[in-house]
Structure formats: structure tokens, C-alpha cells
Image (cartoon, rainbow, N blue to C red):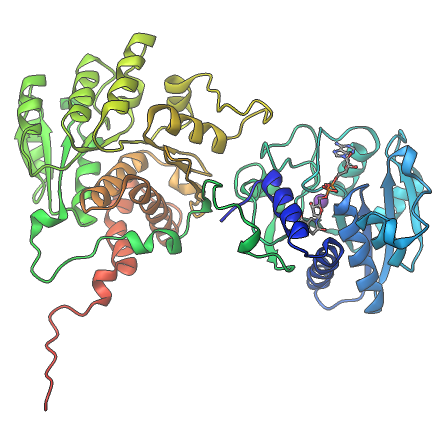
Length: 531
Ligand SMILES: NC(=O)C1=CN([C@@H]2O[C@H](COP(=O)(O)OP(=O)(O)OC[C@H]3O[C@@H](n4cnc5c(N)ncnc54)[C@H](O)[C@@H]3O)[C@@H](O)[C@H]2O)[C@@H](O)CC1
Ligand SMILES: [K+]
């Protein structure tokens, strides 16, 4: 599970309400930071520089500093305070804030700066240049606005330095609620975070800025999670494995669904064939490609196990949809941005089938009344449809979206996908290097296994095929989309660079095979029991 910065702060408050000592949490966090910092030094000697901000992120840095000094390392601490607080960090320890208590325990020298100071001075510049590992404990979950003035300059200096950089919780400048960076941000080699990862660690630009990500347990548990929070997960097999199709010993091909794919016209049949072929190879029982008579022979020349049906107009399409054995439909790949694609998409949604709308089936709603027609059909559909837009298609379809949370500005791809899914009651697969899958009930998943070479012509058609295949075999729309997106990324990883969509389509069955519970069941074995 992933938590936003606001949820993490709520977890912290709940822990305190339940009697957990917040300073002990900070001590555990600081120790985890020290452990990770030592790993960054790779068993060499060296100097650590801790840049500590005014809040608890800075407190984690102070604990780490004391821990490192206790282990014999040379540590320099620079503390940045708001002007009113500077020089205030002493007195009765019981009354001090956790961060001040952490600094009260630090036995070394602290160089203090105020955030209002204008410039990074020579002394600070030298400390940055002379350190081997810089611990960025400036701002974490409490970042409220873009970094400016002294800290903005400081971040730029750190990013240019030769030292390794370890970010505490998040690289300073990355906003844990909007998941974005407004202005400058630390570029870390490693980020250590606590209890659970945050979406900002896996969405861009955070994924890049965090470097390697490590997770430390500090004494928080599921007891501090609010069960009403919608589930947001990193898309990994553990999440969707229990939902993968299982075959019965006596099952036949109709138990594994029948996928109908709408072919493109004569000059663009390849995309829909890729979808159809993938759907079949990923386990769907039957796949039919509905093709215009004009394109029939081109399609026939390329297909063997995928069946072909002539379909020249909407009436013929509706007739095919009446076949009760067809349980899943793909409309869009190579179909054309036109009225026929609009009509076929609406007919599919009205036919009580699982629907995957991709490519042209997302781009063909060019005016507001068209879009309203689509949204009405999605809302009325018996089964939750799956939409697979990339950024351009998403913007055309959803334009300016409000997710009802105006405090979170600007909205990230995660917020946008969730808002779109809720709006049209469909699963939205918002494709990109950090594909987000969102369900209408608020659940969401961020995918992180896709390599850059997956961005290749036809890869989207293959994705529609695998998702439809899993959907046809009985997986729910959200789980089929999550599994399909992960398998798609995994197949590309296994192939390596360079790779074409055809390769991807032929590799995917191996990924399905490796994950599928079916292959672990031992069909065909006869168990003899002797008594
Ligand atoms: N369960 C938890 O929530 C735990 C949190 N811990 C640490 O506590 C951190 C959160 O602490 P805080 O809530 O105190 O927040 P931060 O330490 O992230 O920052 C808050 C402080 O920074 C100031 N600030 C925010 N944005 C600024 C900007 N752009 N320019 C200048 N000043 C700015 C605020 O006014 C406030 O003084 C976490 O990131 C984590 O490192 C840990 O100690 C362990 C437990
Ligand atoms: K930080």
C-alpha cells in the first residue's frame, strides 16, 4: 500500500493517540537513515554532512548525525531555522518539540542558518564540497510551498556536488501531496522512507529524483491505517496474483471467454490484429476479428487461430454482438477516428460485454455532445469498462477535471486518473512511463516495471489485447488492467532493447505462463493411493 504525505501525517497522529511515543518513531527513523548513509559510503571512511530543516525531517537528520558520530564517523550538521526559532533550541527537554529534542541529543557542532538568509555563503559551499555523503533532511512530508532563496540555492549546490546524496523520506522539493516539483528539488542517489512508500516515490518526476528507494520500519503498523482510505498500491504481482484465472480440469474453451476485436479498414489492419493475436495467446478461449469485406483477405493472410467475421456496418456489428458466447470486446486499435468507431464503441458498451476502449475509440469523441454520449454509455454499462488513454487521449477525453479536492494543486497523473475513473465509472489505465490504473471505487495502482523501450509502435495494441484476454477469462476490470499492465512491462524487460510490438505479443504468453496458478496445479498427473 502507498500513502500520501497527508495520510502519513494522519498515521503519525493516530500512532500518538494510540500511545506510541512520537520521539521514539523519530529515533528509529534517524537510525535507519544512519544505516543507509553508511551503506552509501561503501565501507570507506568519509565525512557526512547533514542538512537539517526546521521540522521533523530535520529531527530525523539530527538523530542520524548522533548515530553516525557514535559509530566513529566525522559528521557536520547544518541546521536551517525560521528566523523566530533560531537560537531557541535549548531548555526543558520534556517541553521541546521532537526535532528540538533530537538536536538536544546531538553532541557535535551545529552550524545554524536562518531560512530568510539570502545567499549560500562560502562556508556552506565548502562544507558541501568537502563531504562524501550529504544527508538531505531539509523538508519531508511537511513541504508547503516551492523552495526559494537560500534553500533553493543550497539544493542547486548539492545537485552539482560530487558527494552521494541520501534523501530522508523524500528528496526536498518533492511534494508528497501533489506528487510534483514546483521549482528545484534534491536529486538523490538513495531515498530512505518510513513505514510505507508514498505515490510520489513512484510517479515521475519523483521516481527519478529519489534514486534507489529503501523502506525502513520504525514501529508503525496497520493499526494506524484508516480502513476507509481508498487502496493505492504499487502494481506488483502480489496484488493481482490471487485474481489470475484458474482453470477447472473439465473446463473447455468457452470457460476462458471469447474476445471480439473490431478490425481497422484495409489500410490499417495491423493494430487490431496485434490486439487479437495477443488476446488469444494470453489465454482467451476464442478470439474473433470483425473485419470489413475489403480487409478480409489481408486479415486472413495473417491469422490462423484467430477467427474472422465479415462486418461492414453497424448493423452487422450489432448482430455479431448478439452472440452470447462473446463476453469481451476491444474497439479502437487502428479503427479510425470517425462516426463508425463511435457507433461501434457505444454498441459494445450497450451489449452487456466487458469492453476495452483503446486508441481511436478514445480519440473519436471530438465534440462535447459526442463525449456526453460516451460518458452516458459508460455510466449505464452493465460491466465496468476499461479505457486505456495515453496523455494526449486523456486530455482530449477528460480535458479539465476536478477531483473535488481543490487543496491539492496541481493534480498529478494519479489524481487525474482517479477523478476520471470516478467520473465515468470505468477503469482508467492512464498510460505513460508511470502508468496509473484507477478504478471507479477509488482504488488505484502505480506501475513501475515498464522499461523505456516499451514506448514503441503497436505496444498499446498489445496491451489492449492482454487486458481483454484476462478480462474475458474472468478477472475483474481493475485486476485485469493491473495484471495486464504489469505483464506488458515484464515482457518488455525480458526481451530487452530493442524490441518490437510483434516480439512483445509473442513474449507475453511466457509471462502469463510463469505467473499463472494453472501451471502449478499439476494437471495430467494421476495420483495413485495404495492402501
Ligand atoms: N510517522 C511520521 O509521520 C514520522 C515522520 N517523521 C519525519 O517527519 C517529517 C515530517 O515532519 P514535519 O511535518 O515537521 O515537516 P517537515 O520537516 O517536512 O517540514 C516542516 C517545516 O518546514 C517548513 N516549510 C515547509 N515548506 C517550506 C518551504 N518551501 N520553505 C521553507 N520552509 C518550509 C514548515 O513551515 C515547517 O516548519 C517526515 O517527512 C519524516 O521525515 C519521522 O520523524 C518519523 C515518523
Ligand atoms: K528530505
